[in-house]
Length: 268
Ligand code: NAD
Image (cartoon, rainbow, N blue to C red; front, side):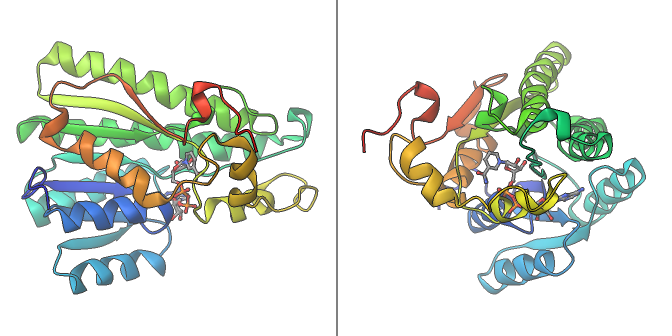
């Protein structure tokens, strides 16, 4: 344990699976009380039970990040239970892939934008006021490598994640101007072996047209380090941004991608 986030309170959206689950578990192991929120009412409580079994502190809230009404309720309940909020990890997201943007339905475009972008907007709208009251903290927004460069088939996803990247910078400037002690950064994972990859084809308009994506297979050829990343490796970056070790870091982007953005393709 580093002790750098001990005693803090964090809210992690999409905390029931993949990266959010790993972030919740790591922050809890490091002594942070974690509000795990998600629409998944099966896995969410399981994550909390595991954290508690390991001696950590966490609670689960059913929470659709696109619902402003629910944001108001969840933030109030987290404040009632823990009395403060130091770390917001705005992580919930989905990916919708289509062979061509011409096949993207407006309803899928809007659903992806609602979760990936509206959800992040609502997170800061409702968490910044309470973080300001309790002395500041750290906001971490989960973008993607797809928020830094284009990806065929994922143009709608790229639009949302590119939006998250610049939104983080703008809110960082706003908080710096307020002098409220809140830092804001974005995290950009490459290919990480989480359940999201299995969900992409079924969530696509025209589901069944795409073969399911195996992140390991894709990462082997697309990633200089030659493998997919693990959720825990993203969680380590989030821990750094959540902790006081990053107290001079705001408005920046942490790329954790096995070297993909650096431009290289593995020579294998
Ligand atoms: P995941 O599917 O394992 O987890 C996403 C979680 O978000 C799930 O528990 C899901 O129930 C939840 N969620 C979905 N819609 C929601 C909603 N409306 N409200 C609240 N929760 C909702 O995926 P993951 O790979 O852990 O993805 C986490 C974040 O990381 C996402 O924003 C994703 O875009 C981003 N990301 C993932 C990868 C990757 O390769 N896995 C790469 C880059 C970025």
